[in-house]
Length: 472
Image 1 (cartoon, rainbow, N blue to C red):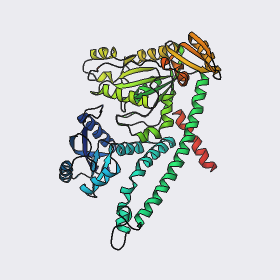
Image 2: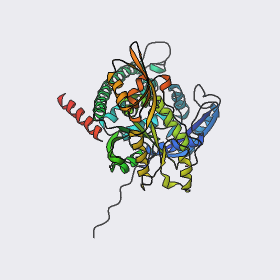
Image 3: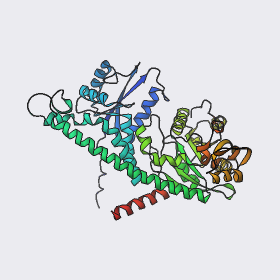
Image 4: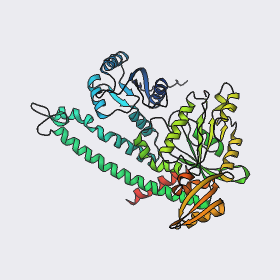
């Protein structure tokens, strides 16, 4: 009889201590306590064990250590008591904050902020060439201004004789540490330039695919929403697909497109995109430009909201702000109030639906409300018309013809250099007219009232990069 093999033991997780600060008169979508709860989930996703937290309310951040000197001493004692190896701040720290906090807490304690933590999670979850390029670029752009802190230990080790050298020194000759710092900065800038060039190729590749889609006349629907709202699970349900989905933050980074059959024999291409989160690092928004353009160029947005989450409204607003930031706020939207099966009172879902524009209560797991959701999407894509007021140059003859053929022209005026057209166009075509919308033609977007508690392209991109590498 063979002996049962013991199960492999996982290495112990690093112990993390969380710090949250509430700044007076600074806008925050989530209350401090809820924001720290989200930070704890991020830490868990990154493979850390949270052992405690500390909070403080301030009029403004401390210039040197972000939190006050008294809190720094309290934090140091708590870190020693809990044997924490990592301290994570809920806001982005500048290089000086990190440097001074490291001095105060000791070299054995790593200081991270929310941005660094999210970048680490993205690095763990990026699997395609495109995703890895985007994450690497964001990491380098975040890391570059913080190099002084990273190299101070080399300056101390390399500087011989008396006095101070390198990046920690004052007046005098530069030490070996500072020389290495400058070399490293140049190396990183070169790498950033290379990554941007590679991502520009990705962007051009995606633009070609979007052009092909538009020629095929098949509308595109981009799934957007807060991280872990259930976008991938919903796509799997409506497309009968097998997109990776997990109950964790940022489980999916790389956009995946699937063809979906809509009622009445219509079709649409649904693209699952990276989830959003409050305080989304600006470096990520910039690095993921090629991916986020999948959203900005979509004919319709399907905003997936975890209706069972107590901060569902705040999450909804956070996504709306990010959509405005990437210039996608004008695109027609349908809201899927997901995870309705988790509500204790199902009747509450019907009340919530009335408070959201074009919303359907649904469950990706149980399939509740999916037929209704597809009906609303079909109507929005093929039957709903949006009022527009555009000023089209005469060179855009194709768009002028499209307005006449697919839209409803109510007024037209010929001017020098172009034509002013007012009327209604199908929602799926609105994105094509966006560059020429006038202020009078900006479609209004309804805001929800108070809430109750609640990879085809990827393969093509990878193949293209592999072919390029073989050629090189």
